[in-house]
Length: 164
Image (tube, rainbow, N blue to C red; front, top):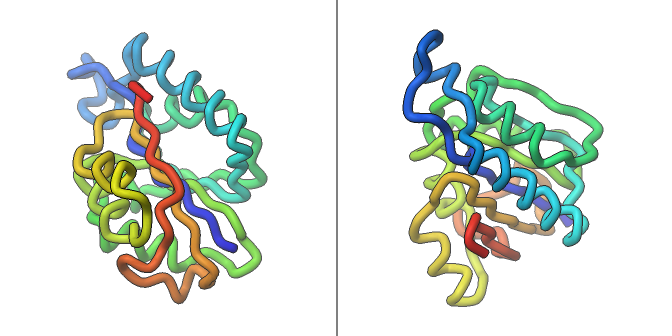
C-alpha cells in the first residue's frame, strides 16, 4: 500500500518585517499545534519515507515541529503556493519504492489536492475535508503506485485538525 499525508502549514504570523510572505514564521499557537500533530502522527505510526516540503519559513517550521523521523526531505520550490495540478505532479514523480510520503504546503493548492485525491472515506471524514484550516493533515492510501494515482481513487484514512 502507498500512503500519502497532505499537510497545510500550521498557523503563521500575518506578516514578516523582512522577506514578505515567504519568511512568515509560525505563531506560538502554530508551533504548539505542529508539536501536538506530530505526537498524534507518531501515535498512529505515520512515518513518511519522503517529505516534499515548500521551502517557505512557515512550512519548514511546521515540519520541524512535527519531529517525525524520515529518510529524505526535499524542500522543493515548486511546492511554494503551487496549484493542485503542480502538487499532484510532485506526487506522481515519486519512485515506486517509496511507500509513504508527506507533502507540506499552502492553501488553496494543498486543500484542493486533498479533495482532488480523496475517494472513499466515512461521512465524518468527508465533512472535515470541506474546510482546511492551518495545521490540517489528510491521510490517504492506495494500492496503486504513485504514477497511477488518479482523482478520487485514494481511500481517505483520516483528517486531523488542531481541534481534533
